[in-house]
Image 1 (cartoon, rainbow, N blue to C red):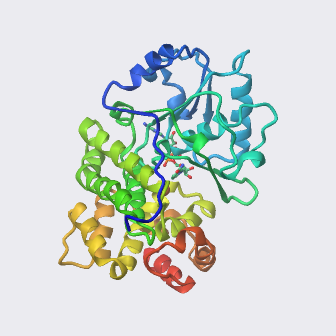
Image 2: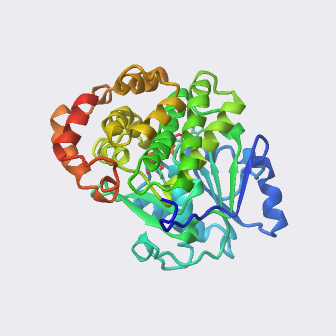
Image 3: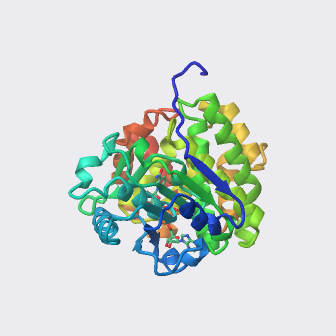
Length: 373
Ligand SMILES: NC(=O)c1ccc[n+]([C@@H]2O[C@H](COP(=O)([O-])OP(=O)(O)OC[C@H]3O[C@@H](n4cnc5c(N)ncnc54)[C@H](O)[C@@H]3O)[C@@H](O)[C@H]2O)c1
Ligand SMILES: [Fe+2]
């Protein structure tokens, strides 16, 4: 509904296109910034030259799906990297690196602990700019104010959200994503699609966000299979970065629903990467919600060029399988006897499930896992 209250926060500047990454240095120099700290993953940490930076620039490498331990290490590293402290924080990588960069950027003051800032709207105003440079096209983390970090003891993801974690500059340069292997391209691409689709069909969907969501799904339909087939297709890579960014715009004001809720236990309990976990459950949730939002589901099917005369569970599953994703839970060492516990864990994620267009019971969720097994 248009009269529904909504707030959209967007990064100060978004640069898109081949060659934009190499202009980062110029952006920093124009602002007199000379003490950057980069937070990257292992792959990106060794190619700072792709950003026009000296390879000696202080850079902390973090692992995928980072934990609080890595956040603490990254904060300590950033605080000590320059005698006068850093004057810019750069996230360079997928959602894992960008989420840690967001948190580091609001934790630079000595003695700030994660417990002081975690959860919604507790982080203090930043004193240095934040630059986000995605090298996967999936999470859309660069567009938003949220960061997820795993508690090592419970393996649960803790969400932190603050307008102070929004980037000043986002660079969407397809040149940086051509190196992504086909499997990560496919899984992260379906994650971006899931952000768009779940926001589009959410009970709190909003007409403004619907535009981003549908455009994002159409971009995925047009470009994901092309990028999986040919990683060097720059136009397809740019299309996916844009789709991922749009998905990130959807996450802030509307957020995801059942797809992400049922995907979470695959990551928390069985360590599947976020993108893959979402991809495995995507067709099942799309089909389960179809009768509750038939028109919007039909628009998504059209965006993905699915044959609408056939059952959606088949065509959506075939779409994901055509991206060379192994689409069964049993392909990924998920023990079948854990499915009931996974259903209980997913069913408890009310902050997402309460917005799903259809009420899903714990048994409904178990049936989704069994179908995906
Ligand atoms: N902030 C948010 O709103 C939000 C939303 C969804 C997910 N997340 C978080 O994002 C994380 C997942 O992020 P992701 O799916 O982008 O994956 P990732 O950042 O964990 O990276 C996955 C792998 O891809 C490699 N990689 C990255 N870019 C590459 C490139 N260009 N070429 C080759 N290899 C490359 C990385 O080194 C890593 O091994 C999770 O921690 C998840 O919780 C955050
Ligand atoms: Fe996601």
